[in-house]
Length: 351
Image 1 (cartoon, rainbow, N blue to C red):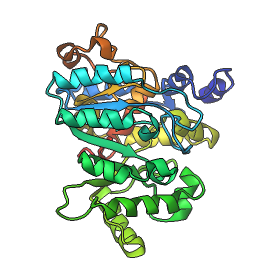
Image 2 (cartoon, rainbow, N blue to C red):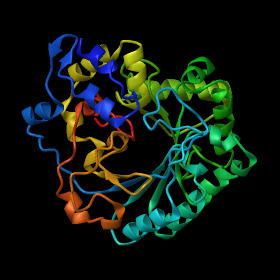
Image 3 (spheres, rainbow, N blue to C red):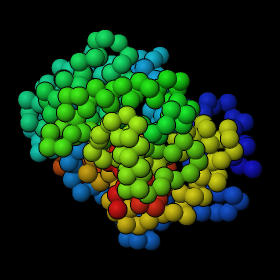
Image 4 (cartoon, rainbow, N blue to C red):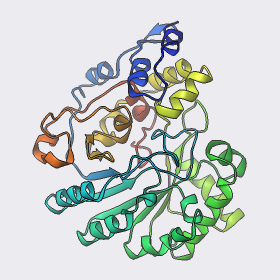
């Protein structure tokens, strides 16, 4: 089969070139299937265009204190890609001169960038809404991080945290031994300063993504179950749960190929295509900034090195909002993941 010939090549699985070679196969389980752009065209959504930049998502580095099986960033303690203060200053200059509303800070573990706190403070001065994607265990990784809940509170940052499940077995299987216990401790720390508490104004959201080659269940049903289990078992409160579909890139693509689930999973995504979800994909109102300042339609495209299709505005140093708003969004087969079922984005379901 075509998949076997690709696996036999010398390219490592993690390279963008190999991932795109796998994604560009037309056959799933021996059947030809439509390219994602073709499916959009059937619903008069191609070319896919932005609706305006509302969210400025910044990946401040790939360094992380964890090595999770599903991580599409391929983050870990040995990663050296870290955003410099100079690049952050360029980001701040853009934020100061545009009407972009929200700054979504991600990583890796973004807190491990030595300029992270300074960056948050400067964004806060601009009056922008701040979201921090926290893996929770960083709050318990070292005493220098113990005061982060208070820091987040001081800047009214929305904390978005990954928690694969409300039980230790499944969480640790996906993210490493002891992660669940540390995550629970971190959530209790956040609750203690007001996060997730009624009328506090401090928003704490959790992110769920499946551990295997299947789509997430109902976001509302999962949220209700998580709230019940975390409250009864650990007296933890949170605001929302975001159910996210795993996209077939990076480590999750490795898993799919190694477990021989790639074709089955892609067939699930293709068959679950929802044009209503396609109309609301996050890339339409988001721009993703890589650790080195290059611009992407989303952080998934970032990991595939698919830069924005705005030739004179592909780096933060030549950011041109008008040019970016007129671009065509770059698409590939992994985009089926964001349009399957109720849709998937960094904020969960889209329909």
